[in-house]
Image (tube, rainbow over all chains, first blue to last red; front, side, top):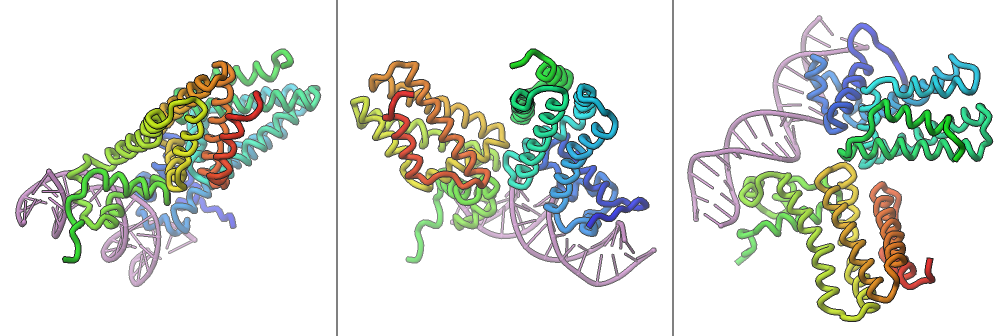
Length: 189
Length: 189
DNA sequence: ACCTGAACACCGTTCAAGT
DNA sequence: ACCTGAACACCGTTCAAGT
């Protein structure tokens, strides 16, 4: 199961290096030999921590889902009680850094051609959508309107990431943040 | 007197082998060494015909566009004069074999993660859409209705291929053919 | 013009051997 | 427990040399 190591370099170091590679050049850059070079170890040592390259990629998806969805929801829930505040806090946390943004784009591009990534993406999208809907309901919107707004928001965000992944450019983090706020606090659709 | 096909294979042989590989296992199966083995030559000889692997993939896209769009339109135009007949003929030619189907699916999956393939796919879709629209207009539909029907038809077909590419299964060739006929001759939308 | 054979660089994977 | 070093298989690319 999950064991942690702190003295030497453990699974987290490899996962972290893989995520960084994805954010820079996409999944294809996740190569055992290249990561080993970066981490200053032999590629042979990789196989102590992972069965093979596929196992690393699975761990990457798991970490991404936890950090980008599970943990974000937990942090919002832990820190802020009232409905309207949750939204602000969620947007703040979710759009934290450009690095997180680039990883998201890389994983979406990956999901277009890989079954495992695509499964995680679909589940992640569903969980995020449900959570935003619940927040909106908690803020006083009726469920029907909440669902509609959350849905449009997600289509726009996913479309933006997909567009960017295909080299289309995409919006800046700031623009996306404003889009979210507009859709969530704007006039009813 | 054993073999005489040993030497003198040209670009077409490599392109054909690449297309076959795509239909079976996707673009990732297009490997110089594997194709050389199949063709019974040394991989070194590949580089007489192509600058590198990327050049082969470009040639594959070019051939696919010609055979699957340009040439299909030419054949329909050459053989059949009246509007209604063109549709029948187009459907017949376009849905000719399962092999062609599998290649289409493979190239769409490829386009999801590759810029060059994606450009060709977009252009191909636009040309096919325009052609079907023109046929419908020629068959007596007003342009607005023709565009609408052609558009829905294409979204459904592309969606089906994308779904299949993601391992979702997709429809059989026969089912797709019936869908086309239903959308083109059915009641106005 | 077309192909072979050998070379080189790069990568995934395994494993005995070290600490 | 964690890592090295060497090995093997596979692949893309180059090139001198053959026909």
